[in-house]
Image 1 (tube, helix red, strand yellow):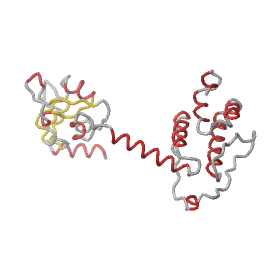
Image 2 (cartoon, rainbow, N blue to C red):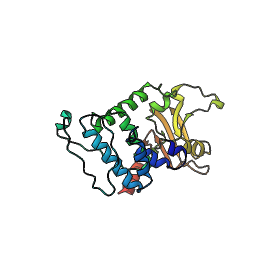
Image 3 (cartoon, one colour):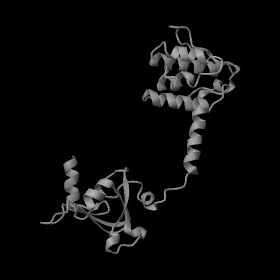
Image 4 (cartoon, rainbow, N blue to C red):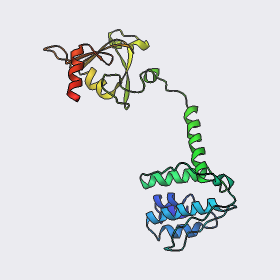
Length: 240
């Protein structure tokens, strides 16, 4: 849009009117975007999309009269829409996200199709693109469920592929010697000595949490099972 490139129309307002701007009504929508609040503008765009969907043939929709109630017309000549609707999708979020989603959905459904088909086609496109991408090069993350393997940690962010026996100490690259750790447990737990891992991944991992130089570790576990069953009972009571 020239108005956006010239700096007279903000990014958010340009995104908001993008689904309804055409060759015949471009100037009217750009002018309207500078006359009303963003909330009203978004409501008018939603109304225009409904009007366009209800039309028997593709048509440009100009902005409504200032202050006019935004009444959606009855839909005609749209056999698929005679079916009873059983679900409603409501998206709430930052205005930029809503505007981008609305523009994307509009791009995926022609004027003579209901708006929800655009969402379906958009999701199918996203799914196809996702599945087209090669699988993650590190199979350890997939094996461990894409989360940190340290007991009681559920982090799925900043994952590291950790060698149980360090490579500097002769550890190999076999999958049984590799386990998924979050950055915190890897860098501040394992490498600072507060957490100790041994055994074979994934089922035979031994964990020591709260490692101390002057006494036994606070907790010892085999996988997610406490080595000392009394500790499990104490932890269960503390949660009650």
